Length: 255
Length: 265
Image (tube, rainbow over the protein chains, first blue to last red):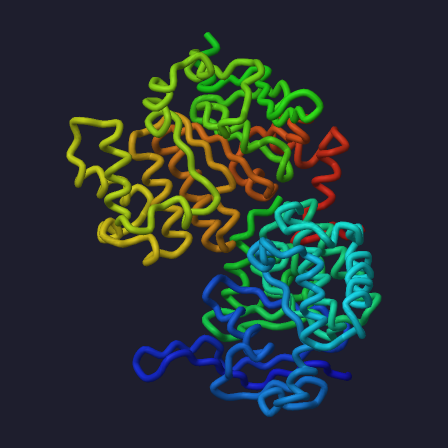
């Protein structure tokens, strides 16, 4: 099967010597185009470090990350810039991810400016309108400030911004954890639509197993920096093999 | 003898913001009760008025709020008729609160022990403070040395335990828990939920739980009230509301909940 992203024996270590923290230990997995791959585990287990290594916000100590067959660690200049267009991030707290003094549309125009997409400001503004439409927001709202939106709308704005460079992979770090259940359902539906329309792949980082069950194709369970279990989402949740996966599942308040 | 049975009876409570065309009925003729030692849940999406209802119990809603009507009977006496001074004695000692974000609920420049001590000194005169702090930390299963720690030295789960210790410092009769585990991991959340269940047994605490997580409702609450745009649209025993919801809004909410084990059909 064709792979978009492959991660092989990845290690992330912070600090040196006695005080060093081995945040990601020998992690191996891959994501196919259009796949939603879940990554679950408790805080401090290394999920975010892994996400950061993939977008090259932190350098791995060893191991290899390939994107479309190219080694990410060796990318520089133009190639790295293209990589940074193709891999985008969405975070948990959409309000914290937007500048409160900047109209949300301008936050997206800036991204297009940096990457020289569109020939002038008018064309970029037109693109913002299209992106707003794509994430289910009224394009006229693009020229408002972040505080004028609800949490769910802000998350849609962050997704629109991430989509502005037409990425192939979205690293979504707890994208719905801060949202209400009904708003959460809407955002999850949006992510599914984007996958269907754009063949967009996701690394979906979450601690909510029920959410992962409902949107992901496969899932990896991380504990203490290691992937302790990986497989089809239904198999892992209905028939967990590792002790930690069972603990995690038992902790979920379900009905 | 209703006071004997229910610690809290909210009757037709209305809290409004603004006036004229801009009037917002944040809480619109809401009624609910909490029995002694009972845990009930108030559920609904953000903006439905559940937090304002909870704050209104001790007139803590934002200053712009107008208490437009209704009664809040706590042990039979109406909180809305009490003076600010009387309320200050009640808040924290008889009705106490815990909130969603433990990190922002503590003052970062004082130790945990100092902040628990403050809660004790405000309401209780003749106690051995050091002994009390130790007892409270023990109650929430934290080691004694936690008293010397600063908030940034603790994890989110530990801080929420400290928050609960502080809330219990004066042995309140009613604990209002506003999304107490939303910011926490699922395993830590489990610990905090177990702790709350345990405490409500041990010290016969009544709990008003505000949440949008139906798993938590099923776990802890005996009865549940569903709020939408300021009104209670459905109420009943937890099982009945979760498994046989009658109101359309409750049905929609339930349909939106992601299931760990979706029914195969």
